[in-house]
Image (tube, rainbow, N blue to C red; front, side):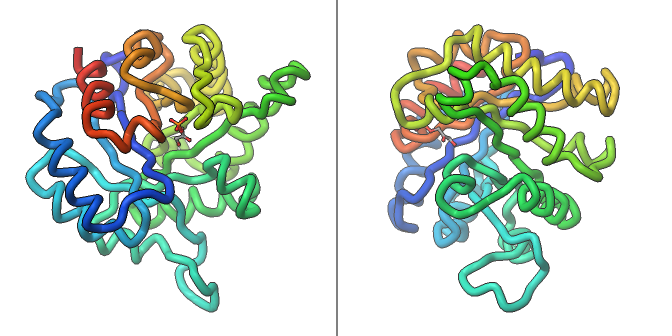
Length: 256
Ligand code: 13P
C-alpha cells in the first residue's frame, strides 16, 4: 500500500456462489464485522442476479458493488449477455474484466478485454482488469513478458484520464483457489512491473495513482504481509470473501 498516492481497495470476488437471499445474509453479517474503513474501499463482485439485493443491502454501508463480467456492445443479439449501461442503471460501480477463469473457460481474449475496458469507462464503470501468468509461463521464465503484453493490450487506446479510473489485479493463475499464495516478494515484483509498464506509457504521476491489487489465495493470515508491500494496493479475494469473518479480517488488516 502507498496511502499517499492511491486508495487501497479490498474486493471480494464471489464467482458463481450465493443466491440473492444468501447474498443479503452474507452482506448483513459482513457489515457487523467490518470496523471503521478509514484507509480502504470495499467492493463486492457478485453474480448478476445478486446485484439488486446486494445494492439494497449495502445502501447504509461504504461498500460498492461490482459485476464479474459484461459485454462490450451497447445492446443487440447477444443471448445471455449483459451490457455496461444495464449494470450502471442498477447502481453497479465496478466491473471485473478479463478474470483468468473468463479467459480460460469463456474465450475472453486480450482484444475483448480491451473492448470491455473501453465500454465500461464510457459508461462510468470502473474496470478491475485481471492479468496473470500460468504455472507453465512462470516456470518458463516468461512471466514478465506475458504480464507486459496483457497490460499493454488491455490499455490500447486508453487515455491517461481514463487510466485513472482503472484498477489492476495481478492474479497468478497457479495461486487461484489452490491455497498456494505468491510470496510477498513475487507478488510485489509483478505489481511493480505492472506499474512500470503504465509509467512507461503514461508517466510517473499517473502510474503512482493507479491501484494494483493482488489476488490468489489471499486470506486473513497472509493479507497483512502482502498489503505491506508498497506496490500492492489491495486484494481481489475469492474463497475467503465468502466467509464474513475472513473477509472482514482482511478488510480490517488493510485499515491498520
Ligand atoms: P482465491 O482467493 O479463491 O484464490 O481466488 C482468487 C481470485 O480468483 C479472485 O478473483
